Amino acid sequence: MDKYLTYSVVERKDPSSPEVQGKYYAQAQARGEAGIREMSQRIQQMCTVTRADVMAVLIALEDVVADSLANGEIVRLGELGSLQVSLSGSGTVTKEEYHDGLIEKAKILFRGGKTLNNMLGTLKFEKVDQKYKKKEEEDSPGV
Image (tube, rainbow, N blue to C red; front, side, top):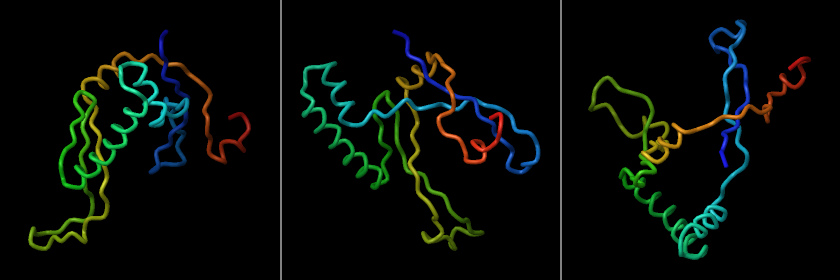
């Protein structure tokens, strides 16, 4: 059975020129969520371990990934991809002036690996209605 990624078409305006007519683009639409329980059930069906064993490993993986990232390590998850912490904030003119109070935000970067990149190359698409609209879009006639 073919799988299709659903999308809707939404208008995007240039924030620097809000008076100019926007252009329309595809926006992926989620069909639901796959939580840790559902994933463990799916994994159990693909191999010989129990759902409880899979859950235990996935929960431990959460802790190990968080600890590794907090320790400044790049976490490589085989051909699934890798995770790494990235920082952003204010800069200084000289290296000596810099201090950690200038770091404003930390975020996690995920880089898809071979498995996910291969999946992206095989996607098929299905157009659906937009799930969530801004309040002004709902009030406008003809939208």
